[in-house]
Image (tube, rainbow, N blue to C red; front, side, top):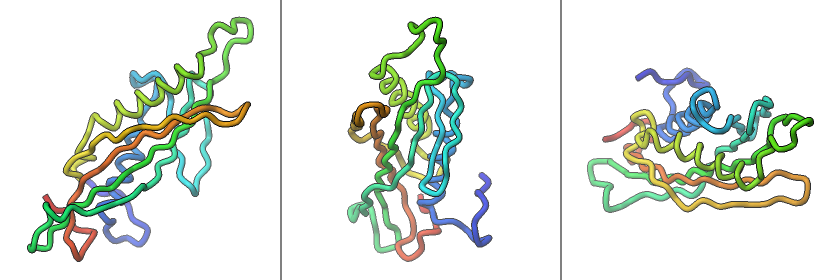
Amino acid sequence: MSLPPTLGGGPLPVLELIRQNILATLGGISTSRGFQTNVIVTEPTREARPNTDGILVAVDVQLGPAEYNPEHSSCNNLVEWGQVFDLVFNCAQGQSNPANPATAIPADRMVILARSDIEKALDADPHRGGFAANTLPAPPEWFTRSAGEHEGGVVRRYVIYRTNWDDAYVMRA
């Protein structure tokens, strides 16, 4: 398994490797790969450059609360972490045919398709490319914004991974 490049040329913390795996997984969601939607992954420092093919889903990956599990941590410098990832998504419908408004997809259906595609992609590899012990689902949320804005929601995943207690760069089994 090859590791992604780093800013300073050194290794990356295990949590960052997991985050990069999630970003890459979400970036692979497209209608050309058998999904119902096209996903653009956004990060706080980047702008999405949307296309207009089908349903466009912008996903912002955010770190939620983290905790460690003392029952699975040990005196041999092992610590098991649980990290929540909040995948906040907004749906926008691509250009529809003005001559046939029936091609428009209802907002509720767009949100359901987007959520289902995100869950399907994330759950295909619960070990996050070998960097995590497991990825578990957590309850999603739906939201509706003010008039004229798109609807969306939050898909949550709880990622369990292990490192050395004194070194977040060392992955443990």
